[in-house]
Image (cartoon, rainbow over all chains, first blue to last red; front, side, top):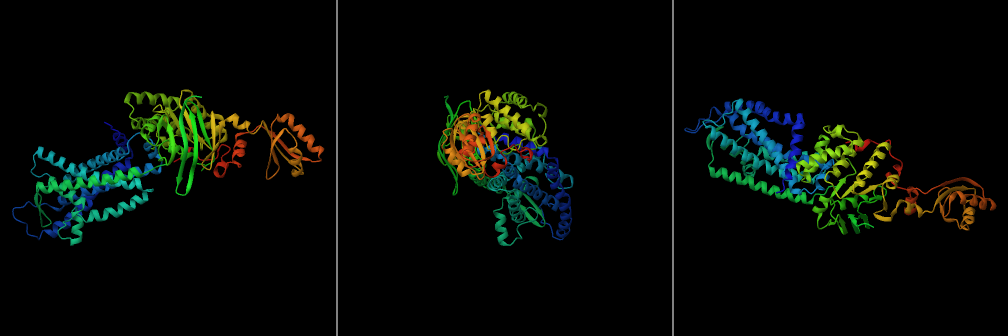
Length: 278
Length: 330
């Protein structure tokens, strides 16, 4: 079996750990989101929703816990969308020619970048999880240790599937573009609707219909649903809304992310086949 | 003649309306150093990119190391090494990592990678820079590291695209020594250059390429011999009359008109012919203002075959570019 993609993975991880400022900022930034946005918003939301009578018999989840899942998802989205940028730099600096002129099959470049991007997302997700719990998010409440481990595995499974989809997309865009500026532009355009038309920070039930429709085809919504299911549970209330998720819903969410990933991989495959670097 | 290791027939390559490579055919023998000499924009890099499978072949055939670039690009990639025109080193990786990455790309086993990295770093005298980031290397060191990388997988053919561009004269000479020693170990070398002296010094055979076509191919001395034994440049008080006189002389093979003065291609030994020429001219009442006798150089060969000097940037670079930035410093 050709394990050539591990070579690409190896190099990208060297770079990840070598650029200390990038490494530290990528780990600290989501923590800062939690610390500032999370605490500030949860203070407000908790005050606003304290008037709403709780639904009897349903566990109440505070806003910090609710949005922590969204911050994991958001960080995964950003990291993954930027994950392909190394291809763009390599292309601009001529380094991609060494790889394209080597016997390494091109899809292994995609696999390698995806694997390193996914690893980065895993590291970030775990850091946010730990940090969120430290500042008061109530994750895994009442879980036994095996249940907690299983839940973390479930979260990482969702994070991984989601990350792959957006890494493939990022790789496809990067290999098609000429300059990093173009990629920044496209990422900015994509992140707004994906992030805000989702359930990451607030419920979608109050959205106008067109926004709700977007949220239903938005992979981020399914990622957040998955993370909340594993970290909080399948039956809770937050911001006065009753959330339920059955294992069937979760399976559907996961399959949606897998389908998204497959489509994005096909896109990347096509773009890489077309790409020529000279 | 030994077996050809590269066989190219009727190769064309177009970018839209522009024909970069306009029907070239040539063969490279196993074990030789073969040069493409031509100005920037002549189509050298395009041709090389087709041979190393970075550009899809459009028209014609090319066999490299026994494999067809159209049908079996994968096999071609496995058999060749490439040193690109621009520096293609990751600034933030060490010399060892650069070679390690390359070896892994080609699926070399771990023990062989280790051995080869040691061998090559000492071949190009970068042992002491083993764990230094490439951004801290000088232009010449970067080039040497790239040559080492090109040799990592023991390729049958090493492609060098403008290997000494932007290097100072001393470094160039040392680079030529490396290239020769690599060739002596049995690697066939295909190089492109727009430096006359580089093609002249290094290669066994040279193809002069211009406007996407091969103008002529031959050994360096053969190419120079086509110009005759010696060249005479002269200015007289009446060039028109001088040409009439000189045309009658059997020792003068060809007369070329220049913007100032004339150039004579001699078929005999210039030291003996020149006094004759002077006699004839003074007998015809023509006064010589300037005269210069020299052996033909590759510059003259190029001028002769293309009808002009290396154009554009190429022209500025006929002498080694000492004043340019080192090694494509990125």
